[in-house]
Image (cartoon, rainbow, N blue to C red):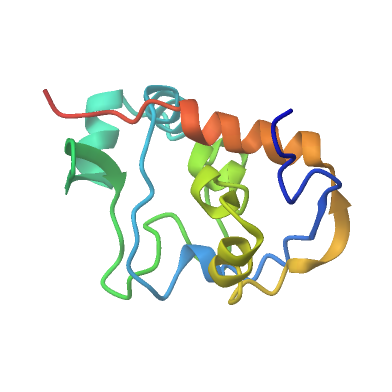
Length: 146
């Protein structure tokens, strides 16, 4: 019988809307095709125009991947006292902090969420929901440059 994940009974997490995960540090917000379409539609832009204005290509281990740009302050391009595209935010943002690699073990979870004030507090998030976020994170195909 496979070992149950440490989060099988849930984890406490309540987003404090502090925007720590969105600003003041380098990082990548990788985009799926559905992300590009949803965001570009919400901005009333063509997909290619959205990519030209708000995205950049990032060299990654398996080739170039599409990511949102950052401001010179290292804030997400869509952060301004909160997320400007919250209703259509990328899958990566929707599933945070329940990314597959952050759930490898309880030790990894604690170390990767140690700066997040919502981790370990607030509502008990079900193990089923956490597993679904991890699976969505794992299965999402990021737009890659041909």
